[in-house]
Structures are given as structure tokens and as C-alpha cells.
Image (tube, rainbow, N blue to C red):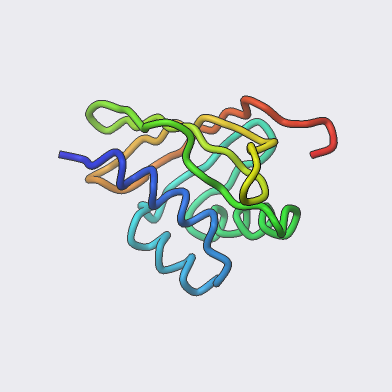
Length: 121
């Protein structure tokens, strides 16, 4: 049985990882080689594409971190969780909900939705 809490936590940890070599390790462990990521403003294919997206978000928001909001839920190979992106210690100005499709317990695809984005972001 898939541990949806672990999937969501490791996903958030990946987006917060600043060391590229460790991020690549995490992608190899938790994502399939042909994984895809898509949301309303960006998309990436495979480990290289996803890693580039994460590096870009970290560069654009250097003082922000991701955190889980609420509890993940899911069934079968599907996981849904919400997240916030912002500085530590305050309510996240950017919020979203992601849907993961798993294959053998690893992320095969992520479809992301942006629930709250300030105009300045």
C-alpha cells in the first residue's frame, strides 16, 4: 500500500532541496525516469526537466520554502495534496494543489493547480 503522507512529504522536500546533486538523487529515488510535471505556468519532462523547474522556482523565490497544507489524501495510484510557498513564519502568499499519479509507488506525473498567486508573483 502506498504511503500518501510519505509521497507528499518527499515531494515537498524535493522542492526545498537546494543542493542539485541531492535533488537529482531524490528524483531518481522517488520519480520514474519518464515522469512529467505540468501546471498553468510551466512544464517539464523527465528528471532533467523537473530538476530545471525546481531550480528556476528556487532562483525566482530564493527566500521562500514549500510546506504542506492540510493532510494529503488519495486512493490507488492517485495522491492529492495542497502546499504553500513563502517565507518561514508567515502564511504562504502562494498556494496550490497537486495531483500525483504513481507507478509502483513512484511519481509518474504531477498535475499542479495554483490556488492563490499574488499579482506581484
